[in-house]
Image (cartoon, rainbow, N blue to C red):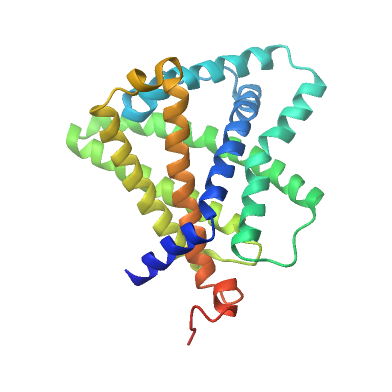
Length: 262
């Protein structure tokens, strides 16, 4: 509990909440170019299955609009658009590493061009992995519905989603660290990130079930909901990064004597 309190204090005192907001901005700036490249790689993308989830049902209109715009652009894309969209889609990964350099108080910053190229490569790898994962998830969901009772099938889907969330959290925590941070080094922070994502996701789902944001935000309710949810998810990621930094041997917290290592 003491560690969690320390993380919260650093999150607020060091203004790391600003980093979470910055990551939301660059995530939003990267989504449409990423969907554009996904359309180039796999063709038409069907997002209708997302409506079965409470949160995605709330932002389905926004995602469908972005997806349609990306597919229309992909149908008549030129070389300039392809190149610039790939560059833009890497913004999130690029600024995630820059944010990690701030949290870990890293003096040796990675070169901008090298980091940008690595971010572009990660975007392509992520899109390929997303394509495979989506195919496996759709096929697996059909098999579960066919051979398992409804409750058991839902339990397997939930477990699968939790595992995927943890894998994503582990990957993002490792990439964000400017030092060599292996699986074990990022494990605790990734578990914290995953737990916060599940907590925030459950709370946000309840919020949407018992409220009508459109009455407050009007026509832009979908966008506001997406931004709020994204900020919660990025806050959970930043909290995990702070946890890893607090117990990393060369972290700022250790050098300042705030954490005693044995």
